[in-house]
Length: 300
Image (cartoon, rainbow, N blue to C red; front, side, top):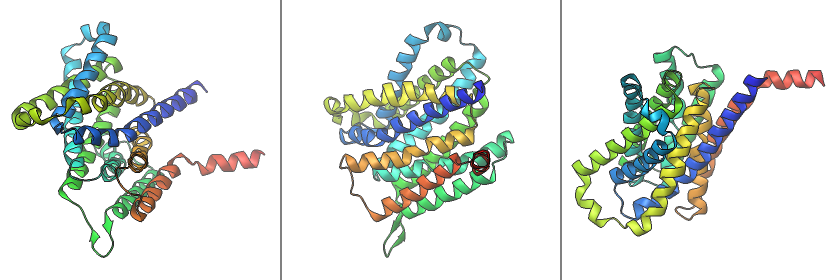
C-alpha cells in the first residue's frame, strides 16, 4: 500500500511537471520574441536553477565526489543539448509544433530502455507510442501539400531524441547518485554548455536582447520549469519506470498547444485539434487498466 502511495505521488509530481513545461512553450516564445538567443536562454535558465539548487542543497553539494560529478555532468550535457535544439527549433516553428514534436520522446524512450537497460516495453506502451506518432504526423500535415517538416521542426525532432536519451539515462542513474546532487550537477552543466555556445556562436546577439521584456520568462523557466521541475522529475523517476515517466511527461505537448492558442500565439486549427486528440487519447490508454476495471466490476 505504501509503495502504491509513493507511486501515486510520483505520478502527481510528473503531472505537475508536464503542466509547468506545457506553459513553458509559450513562455519560451516570449523570451525568443525578446530577442534572447538560444544559448543565452539555456544558459540563464539553468544557471539560475543551479544557483537556487546550490543554495538550498549546499550541504549535499559540498560532498559531491568525482563519481557523482561524472554521472551528473553526463546528464547535464544531454539535457543542455536537448534544450539548445528545442529553443533553436522553436524559433523557426510554432510553439504548438515544438510542444507536440518534443512529446515524441514517448515513442523513443521504451526502445532506448529496451536496448540499453533491457527494460522490455509492454504491448500497451507500444500502442501508446504508435498513437503518439500518428498524432504528431497529423499535426505536420498541410491540406493538399502532405507532410510539411521545416528545418525548425527537424531540430525539435532531434531535441525529442535527446530528451528520450535524458529520460532513459535518468532511469538508470537515479539510484546511483543522490537526487539533490544529480539535480544540481545537471543544472550547472547544462547552464555552462549554454554559456559556452553563446560565447562561441551568439556573442553579437547579446547586444540586441531586450532584457526588460525577457527577465520574467527567464525567471519562470529558471525557477519553475528548471529548478522545481527537474528536481521533481529526478525524484519521481526513482519510483517509476522511464517509459511511464515519458508517457506522463508527454502530456506537456498537449498542454503546450492549449496554452499557445489561449495566449494568442497561433490559431486553433483542425490539425491541432485532431492531432492533439489522438496524442491525448493515446496517453490516456496508458493509465487505463482493463484487468483492474474488470476485477472491480466483478467484485461489485
